[in-house]
Length: 486
Image 1 (cartoon, rainbow, N blue to C red):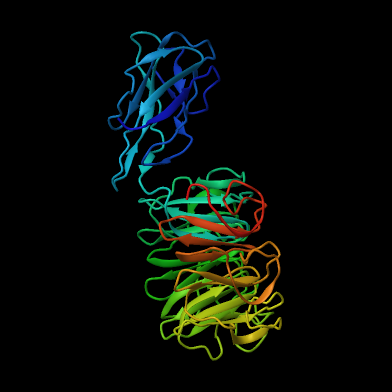
Image 2 (cartoon, one colour):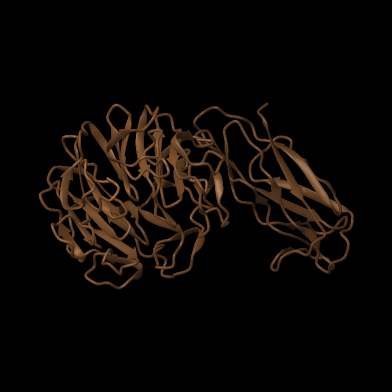
């Protein structure tokens, strides 16, 4: 027998919400949908709280009757029926443990019989409760302004933690969370990207869903209404990569073109205008794109020949074309060849070159270009002493690199410990993050950083006032700490 998943069904004498299901008799019982507290549990089980509201349509006392608990597939220990009187009804359900790689899902509903012989009233089916053997293992991570997200499990579940005041955690609340919570109603995620106040996921099949702040249309659903659950980006198909910027978002399509949406005051949508758009628009004259990255107010693309183009705000030289002139169409980064990856930060940009070195350009007030100075540059400069790099991530005012041996080095602003080297001192040259091995991916947020470790665990460091480090506290850390449950 596997472990027990404790399930509690609450029945009260409160009035049911409008539109509740009713029976044939008068007065009639009404019953709302069963709502599970979580929709994903690990293979060894976990507590799931199911709640519903049962009442009489005329507000009278609940008569003695029966409640029948129904599942859409066999569940051992599910009682055929129990007495259903005013108050609480609880029951335990055993969902068998399974250490295999197969997922298991089940839905529940409640059937209420008000008086003997009357027709039962059934609730709608609950959301699916999934037992996922790899729920606690991350396969991708993204760091935003003050929140972090990860794709976990077999079914492409997304879990997020940290700031949630605009719904960027996607769990149908606006409450911050110090530990990972599951994004509501989302599965099949293959890529994830987080901006300062919004998050987007690429879904298998090439669609994109976004959630969080939408005041500039960055969710792409044609509105400017925030959403604390995922909404589908309008008119996008065949997407292969996504990137969430400051208040805009971009998508790479299978044909090598790019579409962007959201805030466009600096031309960061790249469509030749400075008009914001709540739906995707095509970036002008851009083909053969293999990767994209959206920064605070600019965007960059890696082209198939190993060159890069950028567009948007250029007040710090972050477009890398030797000027400080904003551009609402793509411009070529000067003197850059052999590029294999690109990352746009707050007001700077970095590129990984084929030989494992890194070049950066733009703002450098905190040393985020990594060239041993604090002088900005509108053309690429080489990061000092860095070789063997396989991935890069540009944050608000800091930058990090993943080395081929699994270590991480960071440089730039370090006021909250976002460099992870055990100090809070800025550095204009790379510094090793403390105690990290086996890292396979990195993500840099505004003032925090995270690393995905082989095996699926996640560690984060830096600012933590909203819980963006995911370790169950609000305490900043200048060394990596483990995210709870991953």
